[in-house]
Length: 589
Image (cartoon, rainbow, N blue to C red; front, side, top):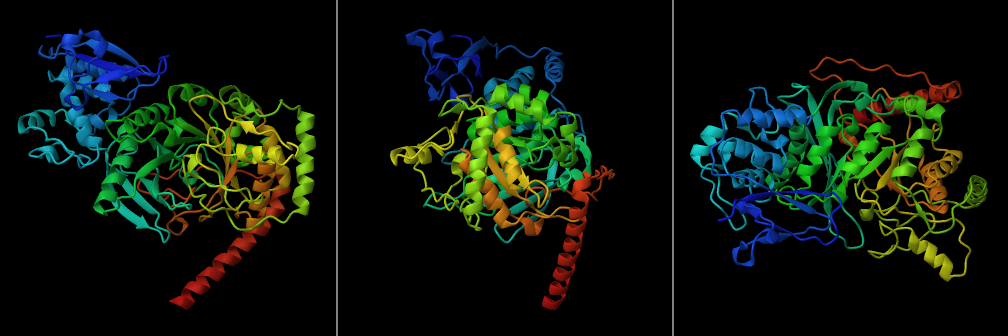
């Protein structure tokens, strides 16, 4: 007898433990406290810490006015909802969040429960991950499924809307290590006709933990940042992806895994594929909202990582908007080097970038804050220890590409620290155990542990190791100084060569020494091993510079004078290695 109410859930200043009552897949969502006890509906409870329920009564029985659909589309356009329609002028439903999908259903004179029905058909497990409305006609509910859409509704809806993702899977490339690259051709949007790549990365962890899948998705066709060591950067920017095209990569990956009968759970998502995510911020933020929704793809916000080269204004707007982890691609410790290999540094230099990080991700030190002179003195002491120690050249076990640092191991590091139990230590359960062990043994706290902020989002520093460019012990000490006061974890990346590159990967010894200095400086540091490099599916290898779209490669930048002789020697070595590999292939043939 009460008007049906729809709840919009937000994170705005909700007191901890606030309960939200929803009417689940029936679509009629009501706040339990809004009605008397005798009228309280049958409900399901969803987790609701820090959530606020705003009830807005809607009249579902009233027919839609002739211009209500246009008014709905105008509201989405005002909210910067780009590429809302496909090439035929139909609304792409995968561009819409659940709340927006409910508004769309109401604008057509339908009940909001119709929107939840479609949302679960598109995204929920065991529903087939719908790509066409007609696929749902006649669908019968299974053990955990639901019935499909009626023929009448589909005939009316497909004239004005579509649930395809605006792209088609055209090729699958499998690497020897199990990494799988999905290649899509875009059928709509800014870069229609171009291709993007998504990588399915199986992660086999040690210590008896379960295997899982990390998915690396793209956010643009090409990239405008022109990082000198990145293959995608050689494409230039050809266009942004829509929200639907980002979401569809996750849907297509799950659909492909189901076809291959791969039951490994897809738990982690990294936006580290083609493009600069914060150069397409609206589509990225909206796609995270859809991907992490509990009634759909249900990937945890804590398992989503968004990479950026350091666009300061976009970082300031993005961090308060989402709970996803931010990954900063730093790659250098001086403006001289970063101006060369990451050209965006010329617009946003290291000093304001580090100031922004200290403001957004302040560290909670386990010791009193140190002055710059004290940090330098302790770094010099660490250097002396590193010159006398012989670090292991084997890479750490379990340090594959992951988006959540809690899944990475510290086994086998040069300090021989024992593996930690789940829940021990700081926000990610790493780092504090070593400190406690030193205290228990009566040893002096050599370095303060840079603890983690209580903010809802966390920071990962990505650092690609380039031989002779940024991999020296001096770079490691400068990195410690740069990150002083910033709550973060450091992920060291082994460089993956590609055709036309002028760089070589650092040696194993240099990588381990670099990591050892960071760990002794009080930082958590892992090594990201190469995955799928034999199929150009590794970090920094995605893209097709000679693709169907017009190719406008950005210029290669002039290196600083002190690197020219070293690069010339590396180019000679690289040519020798390529010639040797060609001869070996001919002999095998």
